[in-house]
Amino acid sequence: MATGSAESFDYIVVGGGSAGCVMAARLSEDSRNKVLLIEAGGKDDHIFLRMPLAFLKAMPDPRFNWTYWTEEEPHLNGRRMPLPRGKVMGGSGSINGMFAMRGHPLDYDQWAQMGARGWSFADVLPYFRKMEDSWRGESQYHGKGGPVAVRPIDSPFLLHEPMMASAKAAGFETTEDLAGDKPEGFARGEQTVDANGRRVSGATAYIKPALGRPNLAVRTGTLTRRVVFEGKRCVGVEVDTPNGPEVIRANREVILSGGSYNSPHLLMLSGIGPAEHLKSHGIEVLHDSPGVGRNLQEHPTASLEWDATQRVTFINQLRWDKLAFNAIRWALTGKGPMASQVNSCNVVVRTSDKYDRPDLQIMVNPIRFDAQTWFPGIRKEQEHVFWAGLVQLHPESRGWVELKSADPRDVAAVTLNIMATDNDRAQMREAIRTARRIYRSGPMAELVGRERTPGEVVQSDDEIDAYVRETCYVGMHPTSTCSMAMGERSVVDSDLKVIGVEGLRVVDCSVMPTVPGGNTNLPVMMLAEKAADIIKGQSLPRAELSEGKAA
Image (tube, rainbow, N blue to C red; front, side, top):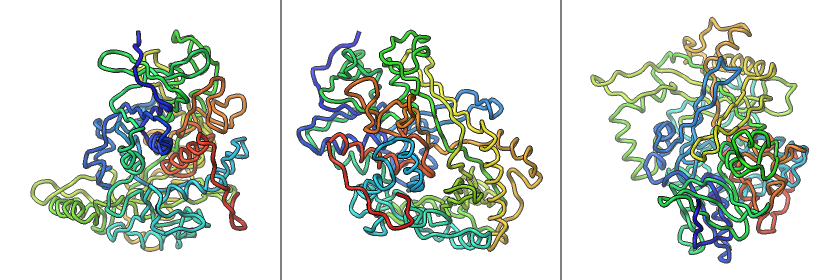
């Protein structure tokens, strides 16, 4: 039996990921609001969570990653796939690759067309600008002075110029700014890294500056078991403590920001979800909401690798003496390879003119996927390899999140169900063929040798499909399991209030009707910025967009 806490709060935010950090910080700006932020993971104080290049170490580390796995995937030969999720304050934004992307303007216009009132590109652009501190300065599309620093990936070791020239040789456009008036083509990548060369996350950008507020409390290492109701009014949450379960009361609202796996999981544990599924686990149904846990979307990703004909890849920078020098350089100056991603350029293109926006993202990296440090005479230098990650931006396939049991400590059962449709398989085939053409064009043609994976013998549709089934993975961008704008299967309304109950909202990627065409960290922080204003009863004016721009 849970005991009651002597303390209550106006707002309780469950989940200290990117969205939860924004919500807690913005709501606590009003000193009259007493706010509690609850995070099941730990603190984000390790150097691997500060040094940008160290994400390669942080992401697979179980100290920082919940290490979820899917169930057996029905269209991937029954494989189970890893699902990295951040286990620290800042959530997955503390361990991700830091790509600063928004998606395409038409992604948000599509939300509005589906019924998400107030979520068109003209509605959300002011919030992208509000949160941003762009190296480009303030403009129609960018903000200056916001909490989230965005800087270019600018390193002489990443072969940016040869890749851009190869794009043109293959018939693709280049662009100066994927978040500007030409959101398509090959561009220099951007990352959430500050002027001191440190990672920027929801925790560093929003929570750290707010920790001195007397009206903001933060609890890490605290599992939320369920949402507590009196009738259909949400009145608090039940959490685990060393002394057993405890109920903490919310005087105004509870906001779930657990992400696309944990928010539907917590709703179902609390009696909100598909009625028959809840009953099968002995959970009393508070509200039958068939859309909870459904509509799961992710970015399927396939990899290609080629031998390099010259010793020009980032492996050169992984020699122990260079690593030591560059680590010291980073600590003292915030400069050098340790202050950056390992991305030559960021690419969003259409593989066919039939699409109204890019369907393919290519993550271009001059380094092998399994790169290791080395030193002559101690550990052998690996062969130099080019790697490309091919990300399907708008898949048709839909997955689901379900309960394994009524025990809050049993993680959700996740089935991504990717590659379930003929069109998704055809798009991935074309993505592989497109990448091959680019890497065999222009200056890269002289640097690229033998194709290592899948290998040049893999050419037919059936051969490519078999390769994808055996090797594809996902982009760490799950969305849409508590969607708005899904008709009768909507879980939340356009103000992100959970339908069928009072005093409860969901604010994270799970409410997005469709996955944006790019990395989701900036979009979810934008979403939380807008949600905080909705709760405050205010809104930034819609953007006035130039002619020809999506609105």
